[in-house]
Length: 236
Length: 331
Image 1 (tube, each protein chain N blue to C red):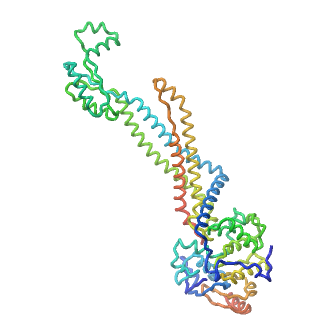
Image 2: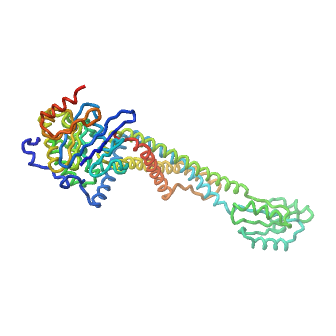
Image 3: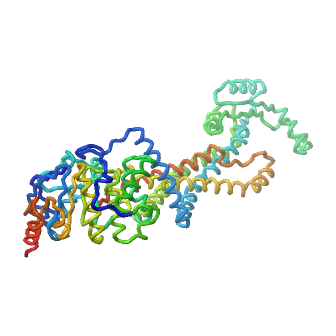
């Protein structure tokens, strides 16, 4: 569950990344967040992860008001959020297994549990059998999938993804989207930041469109309508 | 293997709670055990990293060892000097040469009175006759004495102070006794030694503090570099929700191992040095007919040195971590 209430973010250099953005992502809903570079997509994700703090308005994640969250609340918040990073953020001196196991180790799972859950997550992204390899031995798409496995391995109530299908061929991208949909179906709030129009068109999910820091569209409509909306946002 | 796109329900994930709005809750015992696990993993990982970068690790350990062994050697030297001064403590004596008009009876009265005083261990009386007899027997100038009219030697009371440190004060008091012509402190050098040992002890303490600071700085710098070289990793584990304690742990173990290894090498260095000078020292003291034997750090001292190294390592790592880990935040 994520709630943005009239959220604005102004960076120290004066750049206004978000202006009065309000939306609610209920549990079990999968939502696309789109808009071109600089529209504020990354800022939305950073605010949810407390990598940044809102200048005004309130962000609430899993009933935690992030305005009131202190430094000590950050680790627990991030453990409740699975995040798929665009640049993977993997540990290159650890095996695939250890990378995926990281959130579980941090949360305090014991080894037998870790083994089981890591294998399940790697199975889901089609990397079972590669758990002993190091990330550098994998292709970009495979690394992306390791990142996805790590994001979902402790079954967080919130799942965020920044261009999760950027490095994947269409068939794999579809499989990854299926995984996200599965999570949404069992109650996870899923937010996918992307400007992959084909992807957005193929799935009928809610779509939030940002333009210059403002939420200009909040659609749950048909793919055709979404494409029109995005086309509009892409204008000068 | 790939998923079947058309049948995603086949293997649905099972979040912790319906509605998904709660993180998996773990029993506290599991959390405790997991923390222990992570301690073990961090400790082993820190050791493996030291082994992988063994050359820089070795240099750090040696710098720490040298810095620790210098004050330790000074301590050993002072300790041995102190023991040596204890060996000759009995030789601190004050000889009271009495006026010629003090007869033997008055001399014995004075001796009895002094023996009652606090701070005096022993009093010995040498009468004029004894002195004369002794002189005659030892000097070989017996004929000369015969030529003299009467006994030219004064009566002597030899006082041994209970503590060598008090000898000077006692000497001054006894010199004012009316019957005393001249009071002579035989072992002023022992007092000087005691005073020098006190100064040496203070200097050793100051030096120990300075070198402890040096060890601390070495560890802080080493851990700072380690933190810097693992910046990416720290960002990643912070992004997936690691607590500060989790991020800190491997670095604290690094510091602990560096300090402990430095302390142990310092113990070896000191022991080696003691071994190296033992024979010459024995040869030297045998020339003085003493049975004094050189003492090393001993088990307790060695343990304390190793523990000091480990403690400083841990403290240094803690300082580095407090200073630098907060600066590394994902943006």
